[in-house]
Image (tube, rainbow, N blue to C red; front, side, top):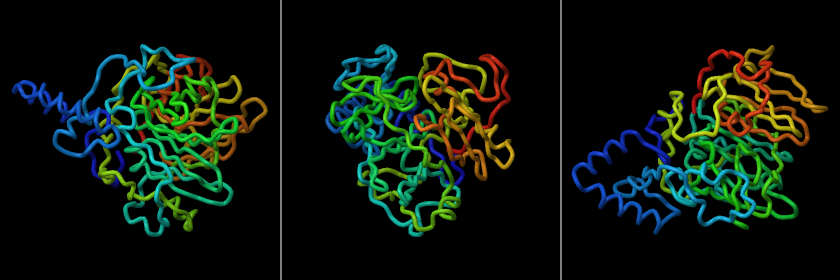
Length: 369
């Protein structure tokens, strides 16, 4: 778990303690009434799940089974519709941020030295995105160094990616659909209301189905103390988001502490433990995964490789949850994530350091979320 924040059972998607409490209420005969009220509240106010009482119950209400992707452009659908799941909150129930408020890192009193963040530098401008904020919002639409970007984080996969929001002359703004595929967030664009897969690395419906946004390699997953050391003049997204969230709580601590999944995936690959942390890179027809433990164990914490004609350089900094991609092929699609998710989306992936699927792998320690 994140070692500087109060652990709390997983929030937006699932909560074991609250589900047990809901069961007690159901047994008492009040459950159906409260569940109906919670569902009605969800439908009536999809933008803002409130933090307590009946509305808190609505936030953990879980619809089992496949979810028809209603309210989205599903033309040219590229994934099996019967494998799309509702995560719990409806469309925009997890509110993505757009043009967030920022403060200088020197004034970020809500951060502690070990707090995780995603840091990006574009055209000389640097900005940090705390995981404690991304866990509640999952996508931030922003402009850094003149480039419109989306910083995406899915807590269920501990997955980070940073993309340029421009494609074929359009600039997209993204929201959170409330739907999952392979336990990974499906975003939607507010132009066509088409669905996009983070770890699938492309649009999965609508007019751009099969197309990928440009992934930016100029980001780091690191700790606040390391980021401020290297970028003392950078800005950081603040907790003044306009949404009522307890950003000091880690809502997924329990989930990150074991190897259990909350949602099904299409396939499993036992070359690594389920929640081993990897960097996945896809370039051309080659998908390859790099285990964070191997990067740490490399000389100077630096791993060098090649995919086709392109160089790959991965660097681990002061711990297994601080990593950056310092070089990758120009067309590379890059994501930091748990192994189970990358392998489910890319079943033919190569695994650096392993010659074939099914080869044994050493156990990996989970990162601090």
